[in-house]
Image: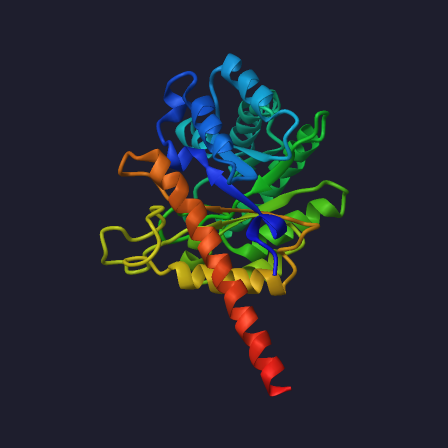
Length: 316
């Protein structure tokens, strides 16, 4: 079987490994240089970069290389009260006007994708349904704006609905429905799947991917704590293993299914990332922890398949 980089694009979330990088000009660029020079990644994600000169340097660094780069606007949304699923249409329109300029920032930085989330979950299920309609309307306008050259992909990430992040969009089937609605009008919208959000929504990661396979652009391996009594309950981007429910063996099992579903493959090479927050301060070690985890999980898949083939040949 292939090495991981041959059938997927191992990626790094710089905003998790260098969480303070956006606060000082040049820090995101230096983090990206470190990751690029490691030679172990084919994709990257950052949060917004508020410095125009740094954005231009980012684009120069990535130019001519076969990298994927996602410009994540989650922090912009959260910190500025921007709600793309607001039921109040005035608020929603204001939110659109506030976020659209960031598409040009992403282009300036050399990104090929922009990642977004919905607003907070309304108080009632009825209102949440209205919020999903509003979100679809926002995505329609954002995709149109993103298709202006140089075109960007818009990635919509479902979070959890009623456990930790409490967002309007969480269930995979609802994200798929929005993508399908826009696809009917030839407007490409993609999904970013995250194991933590999937699990906290009481869904299965493999079933979620199978449901969203047509639209899934990247996949995050992220641990979460499902014990409501635990102080780390929810999606806190903790390392893999206890007290969370995702460990190396679970990641390997998911990867095996990803291969079987043809999500992995030399032609598609989807982006896969570990989402682990660096709370210890050693960004270099955390960077290698993330890629080591993915490569080790995939090696387990390969070894398991090789043993199965050997056993089958023996029986034959």
